[in-house]
Image (cartoon, one colour):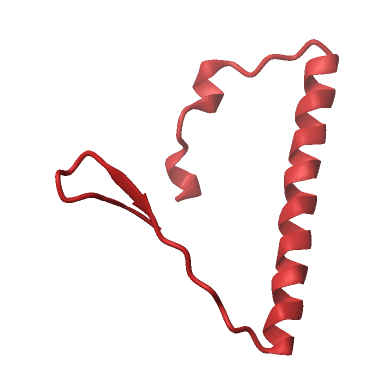
Length: 68
């Protein structure tokens, strides 16, 4: 978690140590694997798109309200 310092312009980081149960730890690994698979799939699709000569126009890169 990041927050502004006392003078308002310095960022400070916080670290937390979690004491997970065995079930929670296995779920954490599973969620991590799923996130990595989604990221890698998206990255692969982008690379394939670029290899075919495609380029994403700015109109498609702008924030999409329907995704919120």
